[in-house]
Length: 150
Ligand code: CA2
Image (tube, rainbow, N blue to C red; front, side, top):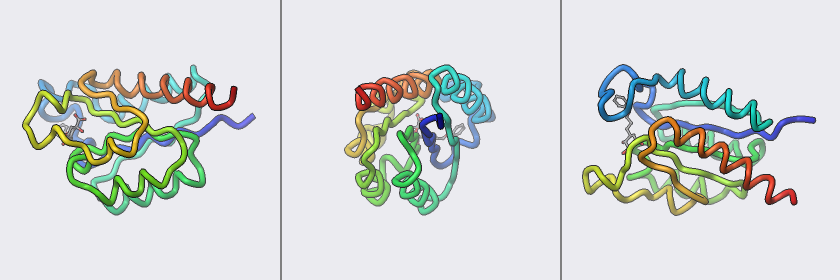
């Protein structure tokens, strides 16, 4: 049977993970995050489509694609979470479970990071747990999908 597809979407500057600011964002590269997600997804019998873009429009188009193809979405919108009503609107069109992930605790940083427009369109948000947040989000989506199917 085909595994449910989970889109793992990453926003601007996350391609720099592991290359700068390790004290804030950790030492793992985005490739490491993808490998972790692939390993966890395999164990949960899920398929993943892991992507990163620096473009707001591209991120919105990818979210729109999820309407047809994804059983769940994990999104680290990065800076666009704090600024993009358009990204929030795109997420609001989805009916599948969505989990927002931030590596850092956005409530413990500058005041402008405390508000996330995108969080208004998601089931839940995990922040401040670093790369582990992606693994926990996959676990949560697997459980939400099981509950839906029951
Ligand atoms: O904590 C997170 O995951 C963030 O989404 C990261 C965003 C930031 O704008 C959000 O407030 C919180 C920034 C991503 C930048 O990533 C970098 C990684 C390494 C070096 C420089 C930037």
